[in-house]
Image (cartoon, rainbow, N blue to C red):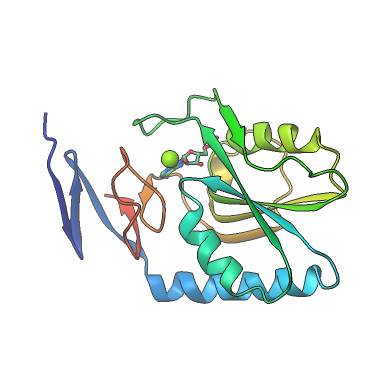
Length: 185
Ligand code: IMP
Ligand code: MG
């Protein structure tokens, strides 16, 4: 088995899989700032609670929340669904920080929506707290893979059904720290 990990700007190999540049960091940051502005306008006069899905969404959340200049709160939720493979298992365990979500305006911050099974489970869990509103902000989405009826209010980029890494997204826990987003060759 090839278990080497090599990071070069335009040629990246992780455990024998080759990845190539897909979305550059400048473009990502620009898009996130645009979404931040939308959220700031939509939530004026409210104190939204952002529920950041660990671990993948922390990079997106950091850039997004820094650019929303209104009072807000941050909580986290750990959803374990993927293991080290490239396929969604559909089975999800949830661990959430904070519980006083009743009557609050919640925004789920996710790295990527693939089949939508993970986020659907998260929505079910958060809805049970009876929030005032519940929206989704995701950096990436693969619309063709979607298997649930989801209304995604804030989406960074719609992408093809190929595996991507970087900007928080991992393959076997590698690649989260990459500034750009890379796609499987
Ligand atoms: P879903 O349940 O099929 O929507 O999968 C969502 C989760 O799978 C995300 O939170 C990611 O952790 C992971 N995932 C899906 N697609 C990718 C990808 O292309 N790269 C890295 N992780 C992915
Ligand atoms: Mg993952």
